[in-house]
Length: 135
Image 1 (cartoon, one colour):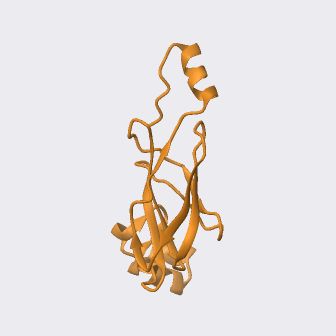
Image 2 (cartoon, rainbow, N blue to C red):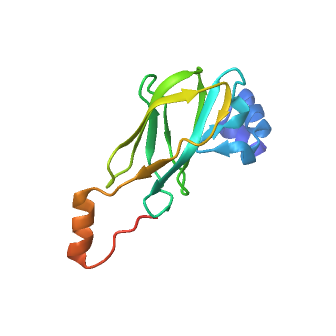
């Protein structure tokens, strides 16, 4: 850990040693989850079921935001239990929204978004003579 000492303080170094890297999802650590709060997770896909990476998902009421990973998975941690509107956006796709999503304490899986390509995206694919298929 001598290399780390040059760049990080002692406290930061101890924190980094204690991180369980297998528990990190979409840049948010499950080790920081609070069991009293609700954790929203799901997947963003196109109509063919392919995961859409770098989709932006946020809670309209709180502004809490996450980005989907390469497989389209996302996690929004530490939300107060309640009813929220969840919004997903991805470049080249129309916006999708969950209205009145019920978030309870603990894990809340299953908030999956299916995104539809916008007209301009489909038209560009036809002009080039190829199918536009983001993976």
